[in-house]
Length: 353
Image 1 (cartoon, rainbow, N blue to C red):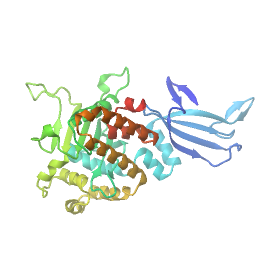
Image 2: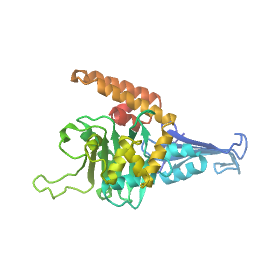
Image 3: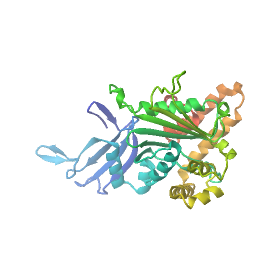
Image 4: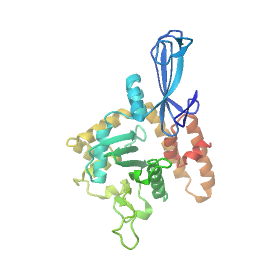
């Protein structure tokens, strides 16, 4: 079904089906009702519903009523309310994120940004997982809004390369540009913070500390900032091993958790850090999840191909190999954002495969 509503197109053929509900009545019953929640590529939700003559979807015909159908645009909040009412708990959490992760993310971000966070809203839920069931490493990807005015993107990369700074800048720009629609005032653009956590050292930052913060300064007068709406943090986990493990820095507690959630330091700090303990419990639970294992398999495959194609003469073949892998992931219904993160391809490149 296709429909233009308030100048926007809604099409059940091109949108992604993300939730379904039926009241259980047979299609021939006047009380029959079923609804499907869709997500557009633009990130907007809408509901396609159909029902019998005694439902809200009924339409008038010759003085009476008969079954009908229609499309209903939804805000994200309305979509969440619908999903909470009509979907199973695991279906809701797969779509909107696990309830309760806000506290964990808030505690982690407060230590990175060194500022108090009064309110946090997760737009893309933290995907907290192990790379494999046997692996020690914890992996975290988050998109959130804090204090109603700042957008934050946390990206964790399992391998390091010279292009990582450009990649996190791209992620920052993508999130920053989503804050305004065509024709709107630039004042509506919100501060956007991108945080890159990499498992290895970045060679050109060899002499810098493990956590660096980047902004745009005037070349001669370093105190003059072009805008406070850009902020990038880079954390290199490999450098942390060189620091004193007995440090009381709470950020280090979280970073050691990402390095090895089963380490003695993490177990010791869990006794005094409730959010850290919650994160460890969730990670242990998620480890067994089949979907996470599938994502981990793709990530491992990407790492393997990245590490085995070291010679620059293989770059062209490597690019084709990555495209082939991305195409297979697309066929397996892996989300586009996940394919982007794992392969490094752009959304447009993936869609054209």
